[in-house]
Amino acid sequence: MKINENMGFATKQIHAGKEKNAAGALCTPIYQTSTFEFDTVEQGGARFAGEEEGYIYTRLGNPTTTAMEKTIAALEHGEAALAAASGMGAITATLWTLLSAGDEIVADETLYGCTFSLMSSRLPKFGVKVRFVDMSDTANLRDALSDKTKIVYFETPCNPNLKIIDIKEVARIAHDYNSDIQVIVDNTFATPYLQKPLDLGADIVVHSVTKYLNGHGDVIAGVVVGKADFISECMMCGIKDMTGAVMSPFNAFLITRGLKTLDIRMERHCANAMKIARFLHDHPAVEKVYYPGLEDFEGYEIAKKQMKLPGAMMSIELKGGRERVGAALNKLKLATIAVSLGNCETLVEHPATMTHFPYSAEELKEAGISEGLVRINVGLEDPDDVIADFKAVFDELI
Image (cartoon, rainbow, N blue to C red; front, side, top):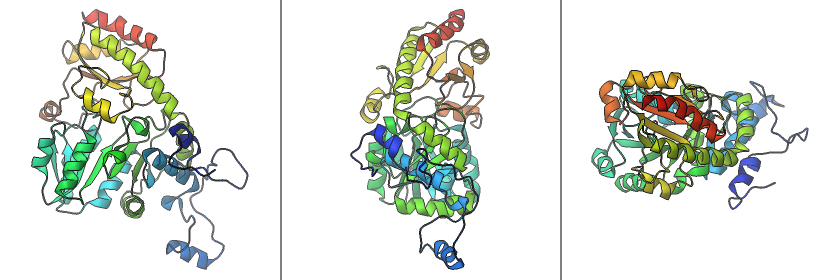
């Protein structure tokens, strides 16, 4: 059936991107092939020249992957989407497509560790300057923009301290300064079910599809969403030539399966997270809870304005030093010590030594990532069982 933009989110997550196939399979088949046949040499030449639609080679596109891309584009209200082999594959493909030596990026100072490493130590080797600022205060963004600024890049909620950045205001400031600046938002923590950056003025959205979009902890993948002409350029430059970060058809199949329950999963994730956040907020061993759904959270009002629900990610400051925090996490029985997020399972990790290890001690401090910070990905278990697990361990810290 034809999907229109007025249809509901649940309808789009199930039906957008689906095409009839020769066998009549309800689910999009896994086209597990590296290359595609041409009827004639002339047909192959026409496809390479862009004169005829069709597939050539899976690095340039695959029907299983196309279906997934169309679904995510519809959910994000983007014209098109491009799959990548990982979240970092999506980010690097996007940046390599847009940047040249001499360009500048203004990025928020709180980023996923590998994104920060790419921007702080890798891109400068190729003549790209990155200015890191705290974009929760938009005056910092205004001061950092220059005639060389090509990209404004940030996450919201930020990883790992859940800092909230006003997407609409950042996009307005950047575009008022120069309409050609590309505002890129990493929407991994929120997903398009909770937040749609393109509707708020952003130009490009990136995701680690590994997380909530897939939702089952069995895939590594990324995606870029934006204008159709940019996505086409990103495929030819960022994926085909620069990174080769191609998603496998099997992974695309698994992601399409996961997307069909995105709204249901996010509702449960968020309900569980709110209950757990309120428990942790009142526990005497917890110094502070960073969760956008709590009224005393600094970014509460902006989150309420631009997010449908506050999400399932939170961080807490535990009382005691780094060793005491580590010892406490090691005693958890139900919550699992692991990086990543968006899984059915509740995961905990210590950002300073795990996901954000590329930051120096000084950079951690500037980004608001303390030695006692613990990041929690709230899963889909019974929340009372997760609370009991935390309580048994944290009560010993009192």
